[in-house]
Structures are given as C-alpha cells and as structure tokens.
Image (cartoon, rainbow, N blue to C red):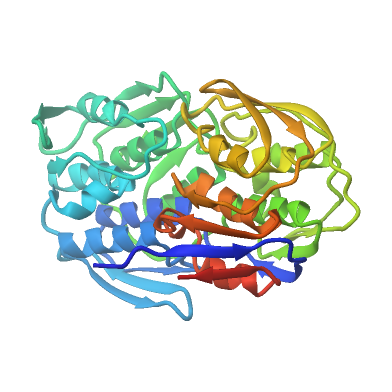
Length: 423
C-alpha cells in the first residue's frame, strides 16, 4: 500500500518563469468513458497522468481493455475489443466518482450493468439519482441493493427519449449524451451544461459516427446510430489548472507566464480578476501575470459555465484574503465547499461563514504556517497556495486529494521558485 504523503512548504518565495498547463482532467475522464462505446483502438495525446485518470485506466483494464501508456510523451493507446460486459464491482469503483460515466456507454453497448456505489471526493454528497433516472428513461430497469445497483435494458437496444435536467449537471449531460449515441431513435436533452469539454467530446464522437447537434448549448438533439468508431483525441488544456496558476501568480506577487492554455475557456474568471485589479496580458494560448497588482475586494457568485467556475472558487477565496476591503463569496453549486475556510482562518485570515453557501472576507491579512489537511482536490491546491504566501513552514497532509487533479504539482511549482518538499 502507498505510504501517506505530505507537503512541507516554506512560504514567501518569489516565483518567476513559465508553467505549462496540462491536459484537462474533466476532458480526459470523459473520453476514457467513451472508449467502451466502440471496439476500435483510440490514441489519446496530451493525456494527464493524475490519480483520477490512472484509476479510470485501471477500471478499463479490469473490464478487459488493453492499454499502452507513454508518460514521457503524455500519450496512451487503448484497445477496448476485449471488453465483454458491464461489471463494475471492484474496489476501484468506490474510489472514483467518475466511474459512473462508464455506466451509460456500457449499458448502450451490452444492455446490462452491475455496479457498486461509486466513491470520490466528499464535497456535497453528489447523488447519482440523476443518472439512474436518466437510464430508466432510455428503457432500462434499475434494481437497487445495499451495495449498489443493477441496470438492465428492457429491449435489445436502448430507446431514444427526452430528458430535462432539473439542475444543470456537467457529468449528467455527458453521461446521457454518451448513452444516447447508440440508442434507437432520437434523444432530446434539455437544460444541458455548456462547458467546453462537452462540445469537445461531442465533436470527437461526431467525427467517429455519432449524430449530436447542439453540444455547448442548453438543448442537444442526438440521433442514435448503430456503431461508433474511434480515432485520435487530443486532450484540451485544463482551464481549472490555468485559472489556479494565474491566481497563484497574483497571490505570490510574481511575474509568471501560464502557457499552453485556452484563455477563452475561462469564461467569467478573467473579467472578474481584472475587475479585482489583476494586471494580466492575455494572448491566444498564454496568460502573463504582471507585477504591481493592487488587489481590491470583489465579490463573486459561482455559476455554471460560462459563469465563475465553482472549481476556481477556493483559490479565489484565498486571493480575496489578500485584497483591500470586504468581499462576499457565494458558492451556489456545492454545499460544504466553503468549509475549508476554517483552515485558512487557522493561518490568520479573517473569513466569517454566514451559512454553508456564503462567506464574508476582510482583507488583506498576513498568513502564518500551520499543519493542515487537504479535504478535497480544489481546497487542497488552495492550501498549497496559502502555504506559499504564509510566513514560515506549512505542512499539508492527505496530498492524495491534490494528486487526483494536479500532476507532479510540487516539481512544477518548484521549477518556478517555490519551496515544496514531498515527504
């Protein structure tokens, strides 16, 4: 078993240089799920080798896929021909919430899935009812037990349907889109999420035989086909990593260049950072953080894309502790996502929790090194950034949660001048 690792961070280091953005976790996981729709080989480039994607590759291997990995060149090849059924019963499923994404494609291809309840990070329980309700609408029967559930298609093929999402859901939109591509007839999805990764996945499926219209808009129409092919897929740069690194440059009052990114994919984030006083140079595939930024308190409310991304709320919350004045952070997507602010307060910040969805921040405040525990992926990277601007040494435990979404993050930040030891 892997030993528990932690980070020891000496704060107050100035950063300089360039940092390259890796492939998007949320794009890579979805295309890995789509692999089970076909028997053909797929090659994926710009692949992020992080804990979550490695677990998904293990799940595919357990199902019978043959996988070749080349971490140096960030490339993988997958042959899914030997996948013969939809059995998702292993311990891996408990560790990875994204395993739910495999259910729709497996159901569409084999007509039956047997799964234990998926796990993952702890923020806002994230129920799976929305997926199971959707699969039933395609003409499946769901049987629950204490450990998990069985889904069986009532016909040879799933039947196209109309699904209205009561709440905008990225994973739900992608799961139903992948389920629909092999269903018989037309499927209409309404109140869909509009994230760039959804459109990119739809474009890839369309290139390989799917008939999906409207991806990236609130309504998608999918005509089912009998067969999906496979080809090459390049993972888009991670917009959350991009935003995290830009905020890091601002926090450390350092001039850095965030390269290999797509600034357009950040939606409301860059305009809000500029409103808060950030001095940024934005190119086609890079963002330069310039020195001399005097930050002013700027309130935000998280919102589905293209609004302010909930995954960038934690680092932005930390940024506002260094801004002049009072700001309100309203987290509308996940309940409990602001609980990590207790740990920031232990370092010296002045954050008052109004309720599980809102905090008020008074800034600027100095931070002092502490021993902290990473509660989830995005709060975890925020605690790393807090350690980087704190006086003295900060120790962060449970770094597995950070490794789930950020590849070799200690080495990459150290290359800019940070002082982070993995012990």
